[in-house]
Length: 247
Image (cartoon, rainbow, N blue to C red; front, side):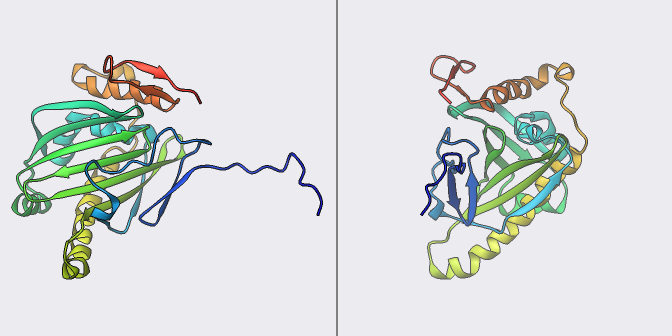
């Protein structure tokens, strides 16, 4: 057998299998372990069939939606209650948590208030801009959504969304209730995400156009600029402190 030449090399990237989806980290070594929802293991939840949407906006604007507190009232009829919180649960993650009243009059909103509850506490955790975990806690139920983004060009982004629901403890529940529950929540969340994608079509980021009410949005973009370059955020000393990592 001939000796393999030195130039014959193959790039290798870390991968992680989750619910039949392969997640690829586009560096030789991952900057963080594969994230999941706080307080849950994959075995605790059931994934619905994923769905894809193409959004007419740059990839970096997808995650910014969770930090744009004003858009929830305009796009989703959600009214902010009390104060929100922003923190970094990991050096490469930024999280915002806020409680909203479901104030819309659509059929979906009326069904949501009736079966889930009139208020929702949403936690959005963004990992470097292209993996976003959303937990929506109502009085009577909790939904989980995972949004993966992939740039198709400078102004188009593919969104792949996986909706998760709590797994039933009984065999009958797992066989009959869980698939129906996953299908219903997938339908509601798909409509929710599509509303964002449709309303955001053509939007562009202009930092000079931000106002005082957009301060969380501005802080998000500053964080994203660092994290996407491999610069970790440290909350130990100051919420805005950063420290370089060896790449």
